[in-house]
Amino acid sequence: MTKPAGDSDFSRDWSAMRADGDIQFAPVDMPEAAPPPDWLTSLFEFLAWLFSPVANVLAWSWPVLFWVIIAAIAALVIFAIYRLVDPAGLRLRSRSADEQTVWAPDQHLALALLEQADALAASGQFDEATHLLLQRSVGQIAQVRPDLVDPSSTAREIAALPALPEAARAAFATIAERVERSLFALRSLSAEDWQVARTAYADFALGYGSVENATGSAAGS
Image (cartoon, rainbow, N blue to C red; front, side):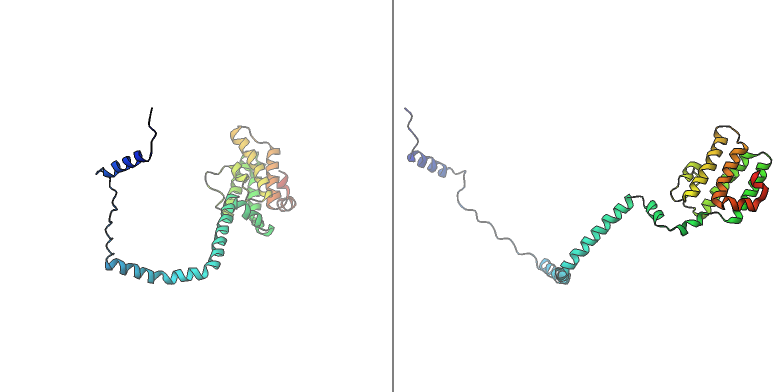
């Protein structure tokens, strides 16, 4: 029969463990840390003296500074949203109708262009006349807004520019569609094609009635 463990067994085991020289029970005396050198103490005191005015100002102005930080964060968030939401479109919508009238070509240049194109169309060169309208239109746009047109821009890309007034986009798209048909479909333009392109440019540049009065019978060529 196994004898149950009692106080005598615990005392014997405890005494045996205490007698084990490999186990240390005596408290260890930790050596005292050496004081920092004088130069380090002087440095900390100098830094405390140097930055104490800044700390005092921050502590005094913290209620105001807190709202300044909040306002700066809000401004950054609004700016990020603005940059994500097509800033070019936002600037365009903010322009007034008067600012967009600069897209109308100069009247003298528009009349001169139509006279040259009419001369080509009168000799049956409808492709060349329509192409001339397109080339000069691109030049007129680039002159007013050189940042919108680069050498790699296609006619379709220019016709879809949101910075152009709607009337300019419609006229340019009409002319560009016929020039593309002439160049890529290898299909010569007819007198009707030329008249549609001419009317689109005239409506935008001067108003059809003004062009009729200015060019006379050439408009019906």
